[in-house]
Image 1 (cartoon, helix red, strand yellow):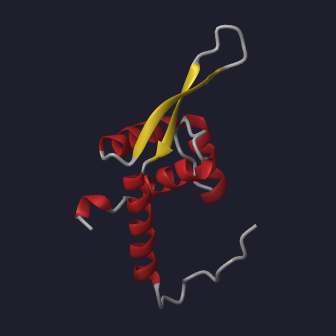
Image 2: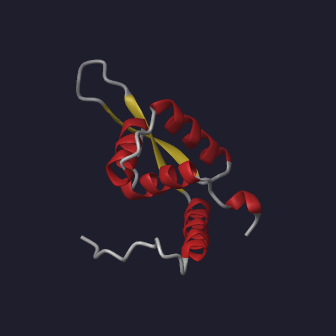
Length: 113
């Protein structure tokens, strides 16, 4: 896998959030998902910039979501992960896993809910 295919830490968080949100990912939902799962505050500016960078790399694509129910509500620009994004996510998680393999700080696996 090429060097550019591995994700930076925040790119990994954003792309994982897009995957977790399954087609309903837009700025605030991505930021909320990152904060909920990592306890790290993600500014909307950082999220938007990272999503755009991931789109430039071909890792996410956009679609227009439903308009907001309030009068004059705008449609949301939602993100979804692409097949290339899924490959980059898997490769990055595996690379990180290899890096921490054998370290005494490696967390024990937790059961899925």
